[in-house]
Image 1 (cartoon, rainbow, N blue to C red):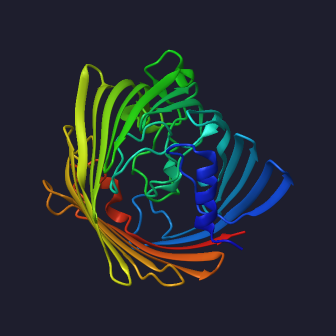
Image 2 (image 1 turned 180 degrees about the vertical axis):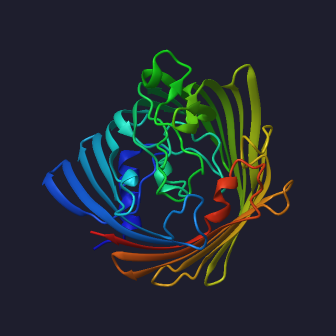
Image 3 (image 1 turned 135 degrees about the vertical axis):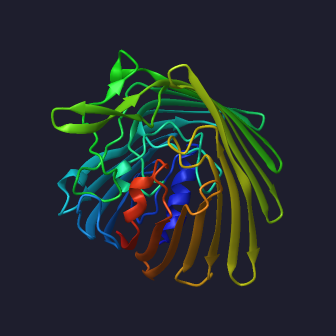
Length: 405
């Protein structure tokens, strides 16, 4: 049985689909014909969390969930069909149970172009801490604080390649609102959130959003410019008084966003920058934000990477976590047969000095098809004037066991 990372790398190379996030997995490959391949696999992940403090609403300290992610991949000549499902079951919180289509994407390609239609997942970014241009997909809020889990996005995608550059366009005919947790869940605001979404567009969820990107490579430098026009993925939570009390109602404005992304690689150094200018997030209001920094790696029988990034956002601490913050971290890979890895990260607020987020993760393979991860997440000194004050009681430890078959 081949290693999961090797297999997914080969699938990505076959599909040549830029910026599509592909998860680790194991697969069984069956040749149906000389030029047809069918590949499938799945990942089963039990997760257990323990929270160190009582929740705002008296939620349980223990949280147990099971994730199942089956995936199929068909290749016929110069076309592929990828399908990935996502199931989440949590016995003590039925609001978190879900079955979602992450991908159902038909892709065809040649030397100069790629086009895709269906439901897909797209990733765009170079930074470790946050990716400001990564706006095509809605994130899966129920899987927070994971940044990698996204909801499948209906799309048409076209890419043209020429002279070390590419041009991409996305047409996004249907929007998927953020799903919020109910009163039994942890990592949620202490005020209930309305199930009714409000939209600036008269078309609601069926507004036709679109995005375009131009990317160019020069030896060690990669530069990308982007534009997005449509429904803002993150809503504004507006307080409303109802017969049942105070609620927060999600409101999705129409925005225009210009973005820039750059990455420069020289020897062991990787310099990174992402910046955006967004119009329309509030009525007659705009802002700009950027995140930039570097990553440096050593290799002495083991691999050690250090990264440092600065986050700036014109908005206040009531609107964003990353208005003036420093992110730093270390990734230590023991370079052993178990692929043992330790990652430590911290996000330090430079204005509210006592406010800090910290994460430590230790992962290792137990068997060829099983990986274990132990993590610790803390939210220290969360200020009442900050948008993430609700996390003040949600420090937790997590154990995750991933089995591929």
